Amino acid sequence: MRVLIVDDDARYAAALAALLEAEGMSVIASARNGAEAVAAAEKLRPDVVTMDLQMPVMDGIEATRRIAPLGIPVVMLTGSRSGGGDAVKAGAAAFVLKADAAVLLARVLRTVVGGGA
Image (cartoon, rainbow, N blue to C red; front, side):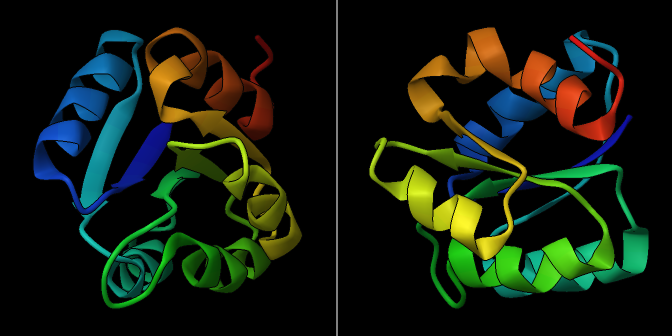
């Protein structure tokens, strides 16, 4: 599974990449904001995108609105439960709390891509 990681916190993105690669996934790129995410998704066509909610330049909601119509599932990562509803309205396939990412994210990504739990 080819994953694009989008997060403005470089340390968090690196930790996420290590976690997903340990699960057998291939992190093909990372982006620091929503505008970079849209460009990378259009160019690289990943199997799935992990998307931070709050970022500079373009937030995760707007980036998801632009990426979801490309047929690329987006899984929103958020620090609070309140962002989940907006993420789904924007076209996100799912959302995961950042605090739960280590335990849940790989399984959620496999599910939204169609690989099952």
